[in-house]
Image 1 (cartoon, rainbow, N blue to C red):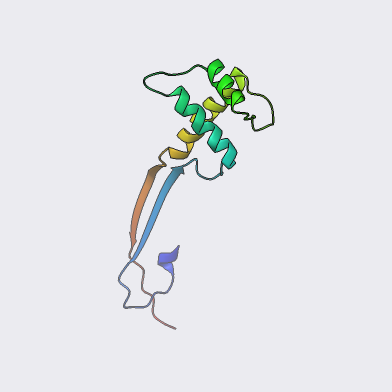
Image 2 (image 1 turned 90 degrees about the vertical axis):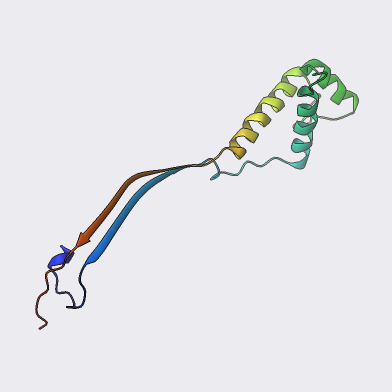
Length: 120
């Protein structure tokens, strides 16, 4: 053990500190949305989350098709595509904005008084 070795006579003690902690985070993997995907999600969420007149997926798909917009895969919008974009975007925003969890498991402080052996 470290305490049994020859120590300089002016050293009175040695302090060992061990801290074990875990960090739970969702920020290790980037989630990339193209600007077009961001724009689509913003439009859909504004229409769907409108407090006064929330609009259903069928009407949103009709509005976006009338504007000439296409899905990220180049398809005409259907209610299921609108629902998928809306739900996945909400999950993504929740994951990005989630707080990290830091948990300290063990803290060990050990003071070791060395055995002083003569030099030489």
